[in-house]
Length: 105
Image 1 (cartoon, rainbow, N blue to C red):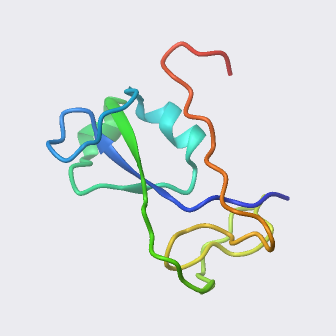
Image 2: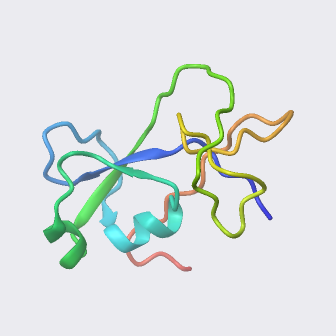
């Protein structure tokens, strides 16, 4: 069982609102950020053709844990309905490493 950090927003590399950062293929982004949220620039072609994407930290305001109906099999509890994290007790959110194209798995 593990805790999840707050969700990142995933943008297509060509999105005008994408932050500067390391571009990776969509499949790699989903491995690194399994609880991420797609930006509105995400299309079915992004998924079908595994296009390059970039992750943006969610930047959520402080809030109380509000359980959602989403609970990954390996999560300590349901994801928060606000930020999609698990709000680990007594621990700050830790960002998962974002592995680049061709990086070791």
